[in-house]
Image 1: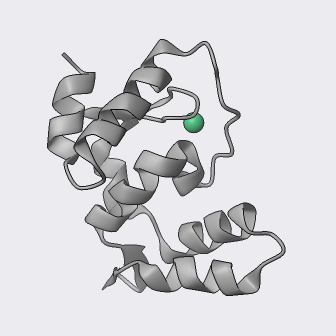
Image 2: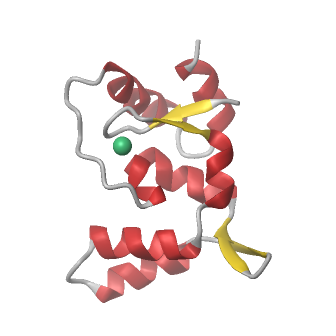
Image 3: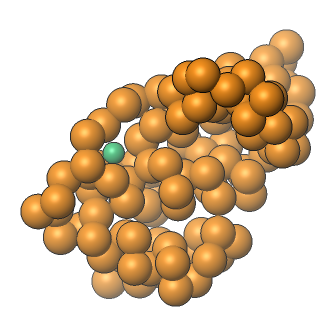
Length: 113
Ligand SMILES: [Zn+2]
């Protein structure tokens, strides 16, 4: 199991969990980010690619990871507060910024060394 860390609070998440982010989670995230702007909510929801499995609509891993690098726990419906004194959160922000939103294995390797 490989952990990635929330860039807001530093909470570790097993990278596998990102395979199970649902479209409902993203809709909830969109409402949280843009409470007064249904257009932006819709745009975020439509920007992710999905796969359907067992009657549930999941976001493809790559897009779930990209959202995670920006919003961390929020992607899973956990509304964490930013922890300014979390070293691992600060490190995660730097690593995600450096590697961009499409290198989960590289980020995990740097964050877990
Ligand atoms: Zn968090």
